[in-house]
Each structure stands twice: as C-alpha cells, then as structure tokens.
Image (tube, rainbow, N blue to C red):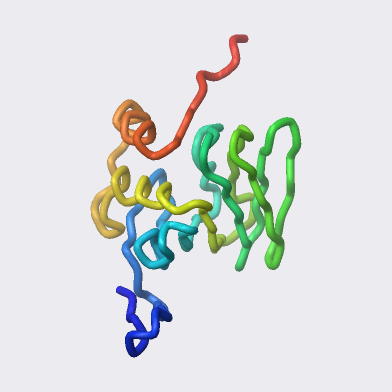
Length: 161
C-alpha cells in the first residue's frame, strides 16, 4: 500500500492504492493510517455516489474530522447548521458535534477526510465489506453500532416525535 521512500520516513501512496471498504453505499480508502503518521492523523478518500444519504447523525468524542471536497456537492448537518459545500471547500467538524452529510449533487462526490487523531479510520475497514462484494441489504445496523462503539462512534437515538 504505502512506500517508505528510501527509509527517510516519507510515505508515498499512489492513485488506486490504499485499504478500501464499502459501507452504506460509500467506498472508503485509507490512504494514510495511524501506523503511517505515528497516530497523529489519518487520511481517507471517500467516494460517494449521487443520491447517497450518508451515515446517520453521529458524533465522535475523541476525534475531529476535516472534509475536503475534491469533487461534487455535499450538504453537511453540523449541530443545528446546514453547510452546503462544493468542489474545493473544506468543512471541519470538531469532536463532540452531532453531524452527518449527504451527496446533493448529480454525480459521484469525492472527498478527502482527515481524522485527528488517527484511529477512527479503522472503523470503515472493520465495519465495511470489500468494495466488489455484493452489498448487504439492508445493512445490519446493530452490527455497525457495536463496531462503532470500539472506534469512538456515538449514534444517539433519533429525537422523539
């Protein structure tokens, strides 16, 4: 996956490389994990098909997330705010803030997600399936929540109506 460039500590990850998993219709590719950065951060490429609604509203108590929109149009729910973001925009979600997102564009969106500190990137790999495997329909939400608890993922119940 990654090349340690001539034992300098520099790391190069080429296009198409990384550990990938499909989860809730999205493909997550870990480009740099905690082992590559001394646990400081992780870098994950997200490929989000048009119409994908994203994860349920959730929060991380120990993890900050920063999304760079490489291509596409996204809507983020962050606390009480809705943030519309397009190609070239950056959206930072600090730890503790309830959030989610969805692809609101007509095409596939591509994002680069920075997870600080590293660790949460392993959730995608543990909970997801091989990108070319048949999708599990419907997804086993109980399984996802159980795995999520190990990786700083808190999905509160929806508000009572």
